Image (cartoon, rainbow, N blue to C red; front, side, top):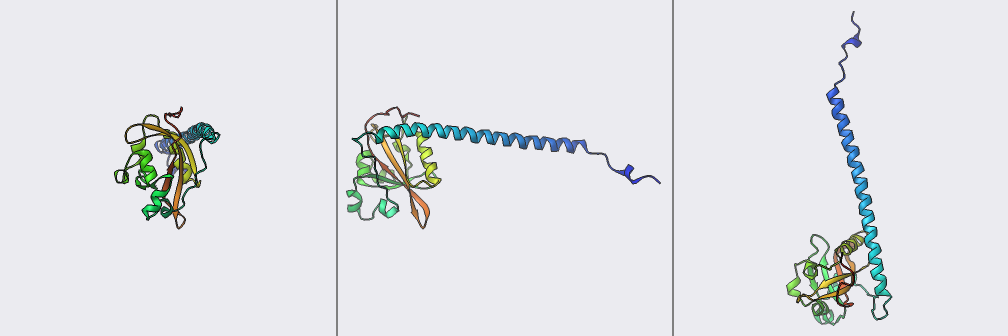
Length: 201
């Protein structure tokens, strides 16, 4: 009688090779993800260090009031009563909290600072205020920090008015919530001078 062990099939080398390649690809992908995360972390650290230096300059300047009170709800940011809304000296604009962060409204102080009427910016994103010297990295990082749970974030950037003139902006960003959920973002702009002030990123 022939032993049963002799009937065992030989190992399929093709399957073994294929399996080894899959494992190798998975390990390579995992290494790539780790390196990618490290690079992003280092890049973010570099951005925050640069932004912190610019913010410190502003806060150390006694001629600039950097203490900005932020609204917490949409009704506080853009009161339905236009007389109350437009009496606010803070230059306020409110954006959606998703997609392209399109603007939904602003007050008179914002119109006076930026040169746009509210009807011209509703439904548009903030790129209408941006240009070559805008601190894009700082802005992206600021929005990320809001989604991570920070209640208020400041960043120094350069914005452009409707007529093309630019101004250095001490920008305050904060989330607006309803029932504990972020529904919009509010941006409060403060003109702290002309030029980029070394803020080009």
